[in-house]
Each structure stands twice: as C-alpha cells, then as structure tokens.
Length: 79
Image (cartoon, rainbow, N blue to C red; front, top):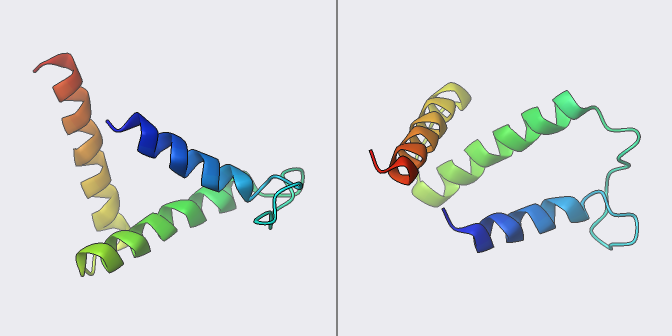
C-alpha cells in the first residue's frame, strides 16, 4: 500500500469540497453521499479503462477492485 499516493488522492478529492480552494465544485452540506460515491466509483472505472486500454464494465471493475483489496489484505497478514 502506497500511503503517500493514498494521501495525495485523498487531498485532491477533499479539495472538491473545500470552499477556500479554487478546485471546489461541491457544497458538502448539499451533496448526496450515495450519488457522490457512486460517481467516484464510476470515475475510477473510467480512469482504469483509460490507463489500461481496457473496457471493463462497472461490475467487472468492482470484481477486480475487490480482488486487489483481498490481495493487499493477505499480503499484509503475511498469508
């Protein structure tokens, strides 16, 4: 797990909600969390497809993402 990368991605997403940042485009008090996180997941799928020249559906990417999470957890446990 690359903690620096996680932190950088988190910081950029957080800027979307920071009214003092020029990247702010959402009001935290008015956003629908389900809609936001669904859109975030779909954006990850689109980005994955662009970077890998794949054509995964949202469901296929979800399966792949879950495999990656399980692999990471097993590596951290030393399995």
